[in-house]
Amino acid sequence: MNPDLGEHLVRAVRALDDPPGPRGWNHDELQDLLEDQPGTAAAVLVPIVARSTGLSVLLTRRTDHLSAHAGQVCFPGGRSEPCDANAIATAVRETQEEVGIPAAFLQPFGYLDSLETVSGFSVTPVVAWLDETYSAAPDPREVAHVFEVPLAFFLEAENRRQMHLVYRGRTREVFEYLHGGERIWGATAAMLWNLTRRLEASA
Image 1 (cartoon, one colour):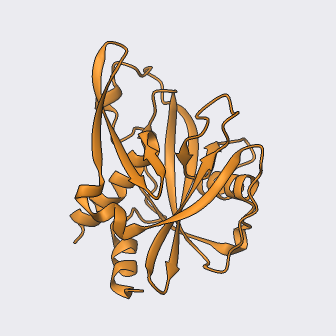
Image 2 (cartoon, rainbow, N blue to C red):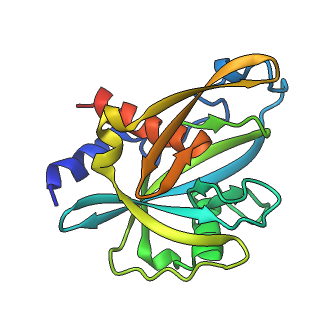
């Protein structure tokens, strides 16, 4: 692994003592769809695995029978619960519930910027090191597949596609990546784009 990229990643994300607020970096783009009040709090984990070949990002594909986001690729995560002390607690809890990875294998070290969704959530992405010795035991009711994608893949601009969809009467821009037969798009792709943008800005 190139240690410089790992150090660069730590510098590029928001520090643990600088969590993002509920207003997403994409707020202006969705302003016509959002209520005046902040969206429902949610968090996802962006797990980074340091392999000998480089850094990789762990992702999941949801099962096809779910009522929301069926079959889509996403980070482990979900709605914040009253029992969660903060976004980190939400992301770690959801990772254990969905993917079966205990907190002992995770070392959160920062945040990406909040993202607001058309479904009314304000999502805080928590970036964490995931021990390479982890073993995933996904909940078959929620997760169909767990896989890794090299971080370098997302850093190559030619791998990022921009689609335009008409939603509620207006054309909107949506990001998409295609890797190994998996389609990574929507909110997950937007969070990965935010990660690469922060890396480029801190270079």
